[in-house]
Every structure is written in C-alpha cells, then in structure tokens.
Amino acid sequence: MMMTIKIAKAYGQYFRKASIRRKLRICLIITLFCSTQWTFWRHMSAVCQREDFSKATFYNMIKNSSLLDLRLRETNISTFFKPSEPKTIVKVEENLDNPAKNNNSLGLKVIETDSKTIFESPEPKTIIKVKELLDRPVINSYAVDFNVTLSHKCMKVKPEVIIVIPTARENFQRRTNVRKGTQGQYTRAKSNPKSNDFALMIFFVGKPSPNEKVNITEKFNEEVSMFNDIVVGDFEDVYHNILTKHVTMLKWVLRFCPRTEFVMRTDDDIHANNISKMVQEMRKYKVKFENFILGRAGGHSPLTRDPSNVRRYVSRQDYAPDMTPVYVWGAAIGYPLSTVKLLLAAAQRIRKVWLDDVYITGICREALDIPRCDCEAFHFGT
Figure 1 (cartoon, rainbow, N blue to C red):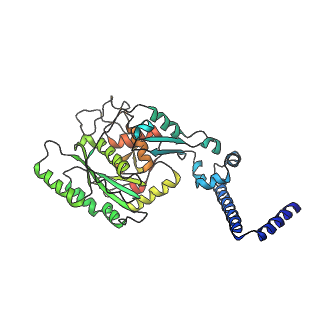
Figure 2 (cartoon, helix red, strand yellow):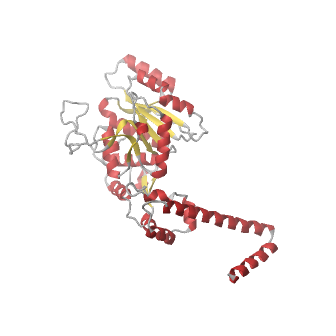
C-alpha cells in the first residue's frame, strides 16, 4: 500500500513539472486505458450472464485475449456462446477483379479466426464445411451476362437492403402491383441515398423466348425504359430457368452492389405484410449470426418423381433422396451479403436441382451449415 502511495506521489510531481503537450499525452493514455478496461468488463459481464458460461471459458479468455484485442474487435462476445447455432467465425472476402487469386470463380477467400483457444469449444462446423466446399471443383459456371444491367444503381450509394424480385416478361400487372404495394412503398420511403436505411427494388427477367409475341416484346421494352428497375439476364425466360434466375439475382448484387448489407427476395405475386418488420428481423439476426437465412420454413416433403408433372419433377439422378431437405419457401427470403457469397460458392460446386428454393436454401444451405430461421415476419399472403 505504501509503495502505491509513493508511486502516485512521484507521478504527481512528474505531471506538475511536465510540459502542456506531455500532460495531454498522459491524459490521453489514461483515458484510453480506462475506456479499454470498461469495454473488457462490459464483455465479461455479458458472458457471465449466459447459461452456458463456465470458469474454463472465462480463464481461457483472460489467458488468450489481451485487453487491447478485445477493444479492437468490438465484438459482442456473448453471441459466440450459443451452442446450437455457433456464430460463424469465418471471414469471407471478395475479390471479383481477380477471381483466380483465390482459386475459385467467385473470388472467395476464407480467413480463419482462432476461436478454439479463445472460447474453449470445438472448431465451428461451418468453418470446416466452407473449407471442404471450396476444395471441391467448380462444376456449375453460371456464366450469365446481362442484356440490361442497371450497373449504375449502386455506383454512389450504399443500400442497407436490396429487394430482388424474379418475374416473367409478360407479368406486367404483377410488377405494377408490386410497385404500388408494400415493396414499392418501402423503397420510396427509403429513397434518400444519404440515409443509413436506403433501399432499392429490382426486378429480374430473362431474354425473350423464340415464340414470344411481338406485342409482349414491345410493351416490355417500353416498361424497361419507363421505370428503370428491370435487369434482363442473358438466359431464356422460361419457367425451368428459375434456378438460373435466382443465381443471376445474387450475382448481380455481388457484382454491382457489393456494399449492401442485406438481400431480400420476394416473388411478384405475393403480398409482403410489413417490409419494415422484415428488415428489422434481419438486423436483429445479424447481431446474433454472421450468416443466416430467414423465411417461411418448408421441407421434408416428398419429391415429385412423375416426369409428366413438368413444374415439380426432379429425377433421382439430380437428387437421390425422396424427401426434400429443410428449406425456405422462395416467395420471401432474407439473407445478409456474406450468406449470398457462401451460397453462390456452394451453387458452383453442388449438382444442380432446378427447384431454386429447395436447392439454394435447402441443399446448399445444409452443405454450409448456415442457420435457417422460420421467421413470422417473412410469412406472406397472395
């Protein structure tokens, strides 16, 4: 105790004699130290309140993490302790300019965080599955170009959410209903490009089939020019290309709006009750999970093996199990951009199943162990 008093007195005398510049430096150091201590113990308090907290977890965090590391990460440590759905400790970086650098056509690079030593838990399954997946050869190129790109949409803005809507060329009334409906109302209300909740809405179609009527083509071209909200992919716009259309939407977001935070996909014939609530749910889940898929849960239902049912038939060659995996209905889906990157990487390496919701949010999601959350806000009406 006496030693502490002597040290304090010595520092006091030194401080009084120091120059103004040196005094400011000392004050800055003390402020930073106190702030770091506060951050550290705030995180400790959050961890200690969790049911799955253990002494070993606490001691390992003290042993392997410096105060400064905790300060720099600015991570809510308590979110890592959810045992059923561990937060993905994987950082996926995008390098679209030079995909060859990262040995995959999406330009994804996996950077591992050493969570095992810090949190005394097994390496999260998602890390292992992403590694295994990226080691597989690319079997689906999805080399889709765009006839109408709208590449300028995100040139000077950073949307919080982009609402992507697959539609058919002839669905003029449905697109009109969407523009007047909740999706259109939300994007008009969030149209300030300087705000943090700026939103965009984009329709996606393919090029005309050989038998498309001339009046449909002319009317569609007029709509494209008038509304400036339709992207046209370089694939034939037929029903069996719904998977290609789904992948095209996600690739467009990655290519032209790589700074957006969330992607919401809705069909052109559904009524989304409350877009604001859907966005709020994505924000809430982003705090808990690095990757997730929100929507209305489906799955474990029998697949159609009758070739005469052209709208639902899936051959055993394409997918051997008789039951679908757990998936999210394609009518309303929400995911962060990091999940979009992972799903596209999986879609390049897993044998295609043309039913897009079953394939993307079921088969590809399971291959990556991405949490699938049945979210009431994403339940929809028609």
